[in-house]
Amino acid sequence: MTYDSLTKLGFAALISLGLFSCANNNSDSADVATTDTTAVVADLDNYVKTVPEWSKNSTMYEINLRQYSEEGSLKKFEESLPRLKELGVDILWFMPIHPIGEKNRKGTMGSPYSVKDYKAIDPSYGTVEEFKGFVSRAHDMGFKVIIDWVANHSAFDNVWIQDGKMEYYTLDSTGNLQPPLGTDWWDVADLNYDNKEMRLAMIDALKFWVEECDIDGYRCDVAGEVPTDFWNEARLALDQVKPVFMLAEAEKTELHEKAFDMTYGWEMHFLLMELHKGEKTLEDLRNYHKNNKFKAEDYRLHFITNHDENAWKGTIKERLGDSWKQYAAFSFTYEGMSLMYSGQEAGLDKRLEFFEKDVIDWEGGEDRSAFYANLNKLNKENEALWNGIYGGAPQLIETDNQDVFCFKREKNDNVIIGVFNFTDKIQEVAIPGTEDKIKGGLLTGPKENTLSYNEETQALILEPGGYYILEILDNPIQK
Image (cartoon, rainbow, N blue to C red; front, side, top):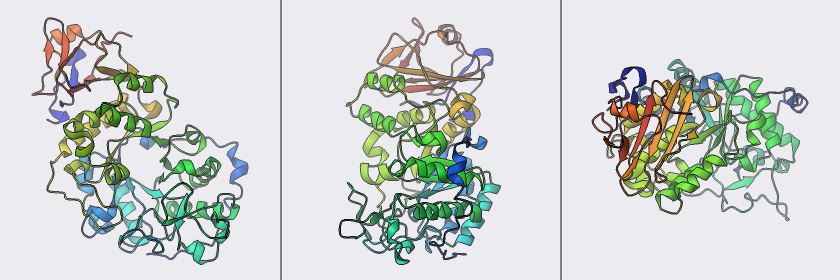
């Protein structure tokens, strides 16, 4: 069932989504242009971060370019753009595209997060000139393009090290390079943010991709391990080139103040995974809602998989089984921006190798494109689900059944109600203010465009693991 097929039944109809249960310039990377960046700190006091307006109803798609095709190239990936346009995603996030370090490399091909040159592209992907052309064509199709940035550490044979810039790095007691403390990342060397020249070099490299290839921003790896004041300086410098969108793989509120538009929703993700395993309860989920420490304008990123979860924790099937639709629908509608990972729409059911070539099987899984396209379409068209202050903050709906999680989001007369049964039992729940709408037959729902409800009590009936995403054209919910 597609979102277009759902009938909008007049004044107070409720509509459900339908589901139960640049040439490869070698970059003189060590040469730092400091003329623009030295004034950054002085300007920060007057700087006010502005979230790009185009992001207000965007969804994001993570690209594992190495595994996307046998070729693993930009040229081959570009063939997927029409399909991704139909899927309804907006922001294309590339995992690191830089050359991968060889010294201390893990596996045959190494980690993409072991960067050898911040101003170059891995030859297996293409050239800088080809990437520049790709970004231009993606823009023409209405996409935005961001790339992964690894600012916490680099490869042990990064060009900075080759150029003798040892002061850019954290050295051990014997003067040698070392991995980030407390990790097993022995293929990468920790960077030293006490060194001002290194900071300027890093900002210069960040600016390179915006200036040369017109990218739209960055997803910043382990951003919480890099000093926040550096990110503040970097954001100001980048915005002086063009307004950018910045995503932090971190969950610190301070990162939103001047540097980042969006942070990862790790806490919510792990809570949902534990809820599925029976290790958390709906009370924990309600407490998460009540104790939210982020501001309304802070975008949050939500997902049921990404490259880390797939590689190290398991596939969607391994972690969520047959309940994947319920958890996906929740992550798309509860708050913030939704993320899809390469192959998710094709029912990817294998852990992709992280240090080896391991191509996604695009034909062997269940085609879930229509399901995700419906969610993306609803996110784009219903203001209640838009991001940050452009959308409506989630509000808990109090009902007489504490075993059902209900919320609503409202913006400019657009209302979404989410009703979720995370238990293994059939549940009934009456949504205050909707009884007459149910009795009047003004609800369509997840199975054959009908909702299941108890005519005597006007309560919705949810199968184990069942849920409804209801779009309300006129808000009957009592405040």
